[in-house]
Amino acid sequence: MRVAVIGGTGLTGRHTVDALRRSGHHPVVVSRSTGVDVLTGAGLDAAFDGVHAVIDVVNTALSERDTAERFFAAETEQVLAAEARAGVGHHVLLSIVGIDKVEGNAHYAGKRVQERLVTEGPVPWTIVAATQFFDFPAMVVSWTVQEGTATVPPLLMQPVAITDVAATLAEVAVGPPLGRIIQVAGPEPQDLVDMARRTLAARGDRTRLVPTWRGTPLGVEMAGEVLLPGPDARIAPTTFDTWLAEQERASS
Image (cartoon, rainbow, N blue to C red):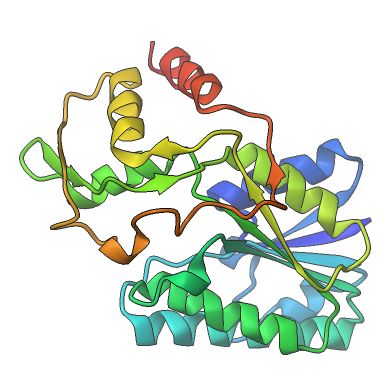
């Protein structure tokens, strides 16, 4: 099958493209570098020519709620309209577990807008909602580090490997549209502070960590079991220990 990947040059997108190729399908990378602007729609019609399914993993670093909502609305509306014109039969959206329970996060607000447009849109759909990636703790450290010290909230989650999420997206895209949300999570619950310490140690990073909700972009409304998957979630095989070992090998 010919499958377009929106955001195909990003971290998740690259793994999704690789997963499609390994399965014998033909990925079409859709990004600015391939001449497509998803916010204006320029290049989308040509990119979707002959495409059977579209996987949307596009992301943004916008931190204001209004701008994040406008970004995801504009992008999704352009993509869905182009899919309808091209006769695309399946739209697969990557989303996040728990976004319906967290009101104060700008990114989550944007993703909720995106989910609504997809579920109400003209193209048959499936949403894959993933828990946080194993890379997330290091990202939080990069957001808060100052003079060798970073603040990290004591967040409970059940993180997953990007490669496992990419494999799920590729599998779902070449199947029939389900019209529902599929959750995918890693095999074990983890504490964000502990994950951050172990990740930094594996990479030889001596940044000092301070466990606190203050001074972080993540609100206390994410505490408890808010970000944990439901009982029907797909449990991916890769463990955090396995991923850490790969980080250690890459740093050595």
